[in-house]
Image 1 (cartoon, rainbow, N blue to C red):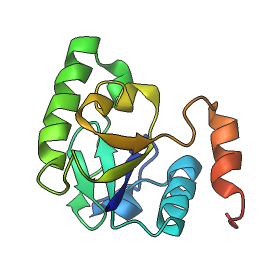
Image 2 (image 1 turned 30 degrees about the horizontal axis):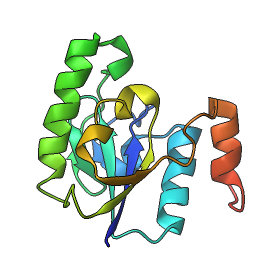
Image 3 (image 1 turned 60 degrees about the vertical axis):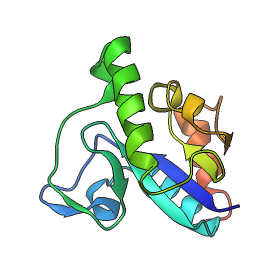
Length: 138
């Protein structure tokens, strides 16, 4: 069963166009990406409030959009669009997803995934950083 990691985007970004993996510069995102790579997944994607599903190598401009400022109907619509886009890259029924994203980013998306885990489901940000950095040098 292919393993796919989904990482939430971050508000802290590089100041100009960059590959998605280099655009987000927050400690949480960078630690999450290192952790994701350590899992040796088949694929890693970023869940972007603006762009939906971002492959790590896709070039994007910085932006200032977050699901945290959207109403529930907009977040639900975003999740539906993300699931549709994700199905172009992965098999939502047969692949296993590891979700490194906050509640707002995963709440309505999980219903589209048959097999998933959320390693940091109930951890506050500080504890998430500790979890991600455990065994890694930041």
